[in-house]
Image (tube, rainbow, N blue to C red; front, side, top):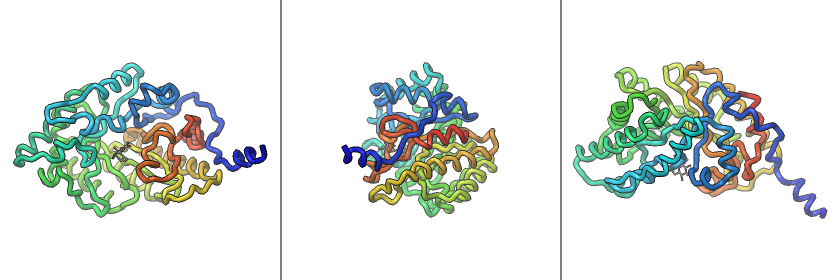
Length: 339
Ligand code: 9MR
């Protein structure tokens, strides 16, 4: 008995008692999004209930990536994404398309495609335009190009750069717009707050595209951040810089690690409070940008059980708003207060 009591006294206090209603999106004056795992949505009632209740914009976490949706050169596997489209339509949620052009999660045929430069270009264009045509009128926006830059601000040597040259980014936006002129088009990347050189390079490219009439509407700041970084001033200037340059700002993949350096978790209850405080800062800085530029804030997963972080980095972590039992954490309650 004593052992049980001691054990529960040492457990980190994940949950807070604030009400789940009104929902986050009802309190916010911009969309509140979540990355979705369709399998969870279809087979886990707790997940489906909470997702449906709290969020009004969804990003497919994986199922629109080329590997899943375009597994063979002449085969598009639309069925799963279409089920998500139907869900969004039935439940009045907007859908954020993620992602058209990336260097990861490519099907083998695409990664090993062999052809002339014009055959590469035809394949690239077909992928972008087939996606945009299929989902025309069904997605609010696309992450057209994802993670094209290195931390030092140089262009990543992806297959797209190797075979199409540095101009592939501009082409991707033009092709996407041609196929779906109504969708908002985003460039999406990580560490744009943390790496000043990367941020400068991305902002420079976006400004130059815009000046030349290339249809680019916004920036996706992924924001895989932590209780320890980035600094508040860096977040503020990143939000302001992109917004003042005329771009919509999407905090597109937010999670706040409580264990960014790995190792044993420091189980003091402060962790949850620090996580909540960091989120409050993100919100207050985001709310300072012009309202017309606030495209929305998307969390990269619903509960701590759904986060990509523990398996990707092989560490214990709890970076999201709800705990593994889908109970609200301090961060959720703080978010409600801060919206
Ligand atoms: O969360 C996604 C995870 O399930 C996948 O295994 C992973 C593959 O690289 O991609 C994750 O999502 C990424 C997103 O698509 C782009 N930005 C970084 C995200 C985390 O890796």
